[in-house]
Image 1 (cartoon, rainbow, N blue to C red):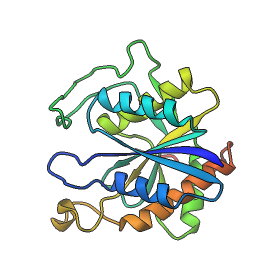
Image 2 (spheres, helix red, strand yellow; image 1 turned 135 degrees about the vertical axis):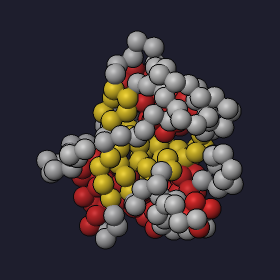
Image 3 (cartoon, rainbow, N blue to C red; image 1 turned 180 degrees about the horizontal axis):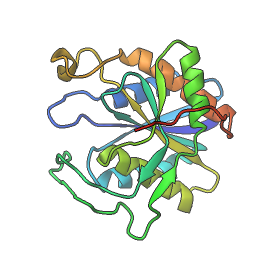
Image 4 (cartoon, rainbow, N blue to C red; image 1 turned 180 degrees about the vertical axis):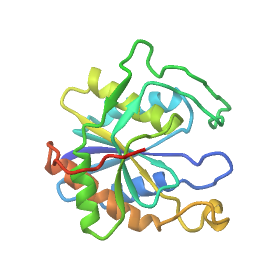
Length: 215
């Protein structure tokens, strides 16, 4: 069995529920064939989220780490690149709101995901679910965790691979009820994420298909 670590976030701001954590728990209960998945909840807090993530990687010793975050996306959104900056229009759950701060002092400007992102997206699309390669994870806590994860894997990760995936809201969430964001039931989202995990476990190399953006 291949060990996989999947992380989701605690509820943010006024929400009482976070689909990223619900999806992570579903993956732990029903992992892809040949995988043993451990789900860990991260605080939506700068700094503390990376401490919890680092401890989880050390404790579980996974071959693959996939962090999941919530965003107003239409489906599975596999992130390409994490950038070394915190720049926040809103505070995190601890009230912190860093502006133009590096995540890792003297760290590289960016890290690319080591998931086969285009292959993952293509395989999810084959199931009939919307999936895309995303060119930005923002500059809030999701990007903070994505960059922190890739820096950890680059400096202490040995042969581990990892990346970040954004998922949609679920229909019962307040923002969806107000008509502000798209949604999917978390069970459907978890099915798409399961395809991402199984594809990443089966393939280390990506495919050459267009998945760029003009703006």
